[in-house]
Length: 259
Ligand code: NAP
Image 1 (tube, rainbow, N blue to C red):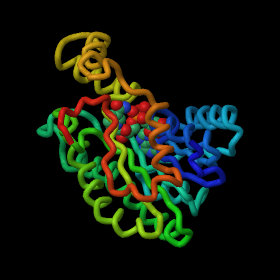
Image 2 (tube, rainbow, N blue to C red):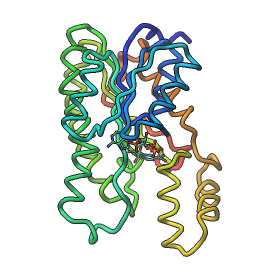
Image 3 (spheres, rainbow, N blue to C red):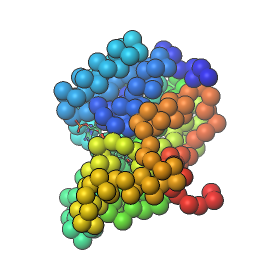
Image 4 (cartoon, helix red, strand yellow):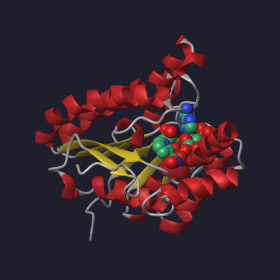
């Protein structure tokens, strides 16, 4: 299927590794000029080079912290009028809520709720004016079904979900859609960090915990960043103007509900 987005531009946040990188690569494969971001310049430049080599598309790389106002300003200066915005940032740390203080909560809310809202605010009116826009927020399966040790993520991401539920109904008439992609377990650095936390708590090795977690998923494995990116690119296509405000869960069937 031709996704119809060749020649469009995209900002993909937090994209030197993992799910963000998967999305950036998938969009570039469709002919989208991507502006990617992460804090670490070395890994970011390496990813930019990889995407250019594979797709032949121009890739701008902006090394900054997307959760800071200055970082977002830098990113928007590099791509002021994106047709596509993929919101993403590192997830908050795992732990018992009794051990988190107000600053931990403020950091989680800033990174996983307010940062995407600020970037939406900066870009959505331009998209409305041009009659095309696709915004995808990378959130988490924790929005659908809370994960014990990820209380910061459970809380902060639901705030973003609530905001998007309202706004996405206001923009769709102008062909600007806003959807959330909810990753379950994907094989990335982030997942390996969470597995290490759970392995420590259970007193077993990381390899054992990873094997157990993969076996417990109905698919018998973790998802890949490439699969995630492909779904994201489809949501950004010209064919999805009637899909907005949705929580699209990619978890190998782990959530056991009928709907
Ligand atoms: P990852 O493999 O650890 O990659 C994270 C990427 O984000 C890296 O490129 C990292 O680069 C960048 N990043 C982190 N903090 C940033 C910041 N403040 N500003 C700019 N870039 C930043 O993680 P992932 O698995 O792709 O996860 C992406 C998101 O999905 C996270 O919020 C995670 O919690 C969520 N999620 C993941 C899973 C999973 O199974 N993988 C499941 C549910 C939810 P730098 O460190 O150099 O900045």
